[in-house]
Amino acid sequence: MRIIIAGGSGLIGRPLVSTLIGDGHDIVVLSRNPDKYRAILPEKVSLVQWDAQTAGKWSQEVNGADAIINLAGENLAGDNFLPGRWTEQKKRRVRESRIKVGTAIVEAIKAVENKPRLLIQSSAVGYYGPSGDDIVTEATPPGEDFLSLLCVEWEASSIEVESLGVRRAVIRTGLVLTPDGGPLARELLLFKFYAGGYFGDGNQWWPWIHMDDVLRSIRFLIEDNQASGPFNLSAPEPVTNRNFGKIMGKVMGKPALVPVPRFALNIVVGEVATIVADGQRAVPKKLIDHGFTFQFSELEPALHDLLAG
Image: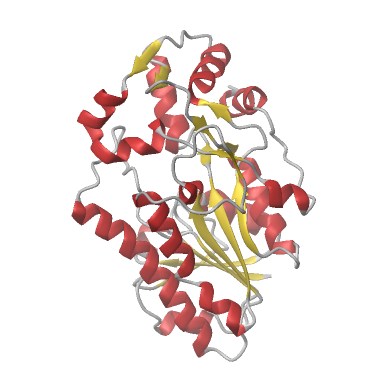
């Protein structure tokens, strides 16, 4: 297949590109700075410049492509150990980086004669908002906080392709576990300095997923021609943040005793604290209903695999 990826240099994008190349697919990565990422992506990848805002010359790549995977969007938590605050300017950038990409992809698909068969649209379990102990499936309605409203708009930005005959699958991704970045990399640093524990009261649910299962589920959605609509990309057995810390400490042979109170998080990072201090007991009902089998359903084996060596 010929697959176009927006956001191919990100946390999920980089390993996904390598995986799809390994499967024998022809991969095109859209990038605002192709020269910057040439060295970190496989040689077989075609890097095409775009502005991530409008349909332009890059749109010709869409003609005859089999699929587009949209993973693009500014990092919500930032790239530093401590997440940056969500100022109004930051919120605007985060929103525009998602909505404009979706709109540009729609316009590119409209413009070509041979339209792709599939668009995989990125989203997040933040769609549901803080959900307490309620089990969250793809049928659960959205919440009302900033992340929920952002995800609703993010998903809607590309919905028009469905009226053009393009199958669209929306991936509502949970907390992706990889030592290369994201929540696990931050947790690793805390535990290495004996500061591991939990956030807030620790009772919030963390809908985690091993990176390998993220990649496998995306490949599954590419191949399953009946798969459309939203899919929760999270392991079948979410855990509370407190239990995440306990299991992490067990795997690393470190104590998990240090709580970080919610008020302290609010003082340091403000509204962004919701990413770790609130949660969703999200389960991947539709993936399982479609026959997908997780390689890592439980957290302890997943962490052993990720932290081996």
